[in-house]
Length: 415
Image 1 (tube, one colour):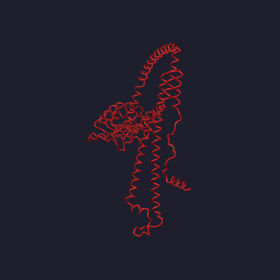
Image 2 (tube, one colour; image 1 turned 30 degrees about the vertical axis):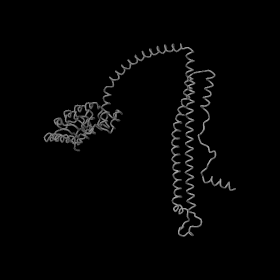
Image 3 (cartoon, rainbow, N blue to C red; image 1 turned 60 degrees about the horizontal axis):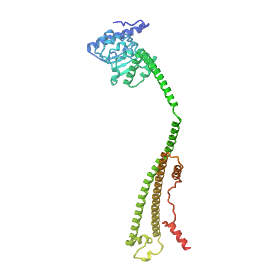
Image 4 (cartoon, rainbow, N blue to C red; image 1 turned 135 degrees about the vertical axis):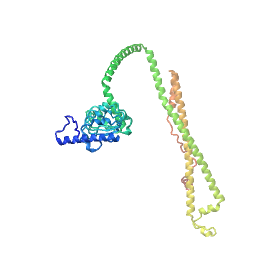
């Protein structure tokens, strides 16, 4: 039986343990020979009985067609024999004793690599294996709980990323940054020195320009300052009136729209009232039987006149409802007329105030300081800010169409 060439630092003191490692090594040699004879290309050394394997047989390098190799949980620390397995696409080293992965840098077919729990401290040999990020659906790269992740918090943070493509891409970017940091820092320092020198020149030139500008500002005369103050005063007064002009224009538009709507409702309700009056009159004139039946007592038979005498509660109720309906309808017509006149009045008021404001702005633009101009401005200003009415049309007598008003007038005359 072949003996496993176990390194001295890995050699156990217990003889039984050494025999277990030798047995695992022999089984690995048999598995390699069988794979070479049968042409098997995947799941090599995947059984649990290889957990005691500490050294890879050199013959494994002859399996150039091997695509899948399982070494998880083994005691293997040297994987240099795998450098020639260019067809290898999956390699599982989880919890193995591997600390140096430089032999994997040429395995460009590798699309899934599992390094979690290994003592690997340097992940930079993985930089050429960009396919680990290009084909996330085929596998990915895992390196949780490695020595590298424990020593660098950034690598540990990247190892926790769930997306395979993003995890590999972030790792490669960070490794490239670490490898180029010394040269990049030197270049950045040189650029910073150059920028500091240029900035100093710019500051000197700016100081010169500021000094020249201050000298020019000191040369401005009092006449310019007075003109500037006058222009600022006129500008403030003009702007103070621009907001009211815009407000009154907006109110004029609003009141015009509401006046048009109230007019439509007024005319429509007036037409509806007239139509209903015509319908009621027609019913009383041309359909006397129907009208009589509506106001006759309950149980009235035209063939028996004696049944139609007496008080008619139904007739009184119907007449009361009709009167109440027409009272409400006339009230609605009257209210729409008031709304129409009120909104029309407010629209005209807003238009007048807009005109007064624009006239006042025109007076200010003339910059006339005479007493006559001041009086004109005062008159326009007083008209502009006169007390505003609410536009509500007040009742000043006239016909009141309500039943209560008619009853009150009748009782007043009777007394």
